[in-house]
Length: 143
Image (cartoon, rainbow, N blue to C red; front, side, top):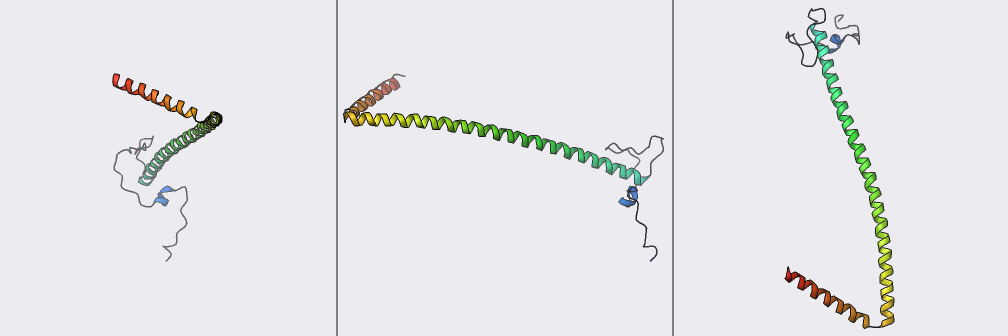
């Protein structure tokens, strides 16, 4: 029972935190960690494995931070596009409202004119429509 009770491992001792480490292969890590320390002696397995994991974590963290930056840029671009589209839509709404006012005034004046002249204006409109269609048909067959 006394063998089961251990003191808490130091948080700085990574090999104690990570447990068993894989055997050394004698090759360098593709993630920048080296099997050999600067003095030329091979590092202990636990420390090398922890350094490799730390290098992998750093690379994953760099990749994630780049993706977050790309997403941030994308959302900022979307926000700018939404603001520009909102401005354009409000300008179009103003233009349509102005056009609606002009057309309603024109129809009101036309109805006033029609009420004053009786039914004669209707014959003018029919005559102009027939002439217009005659020229359109002539132009169509002449092509």
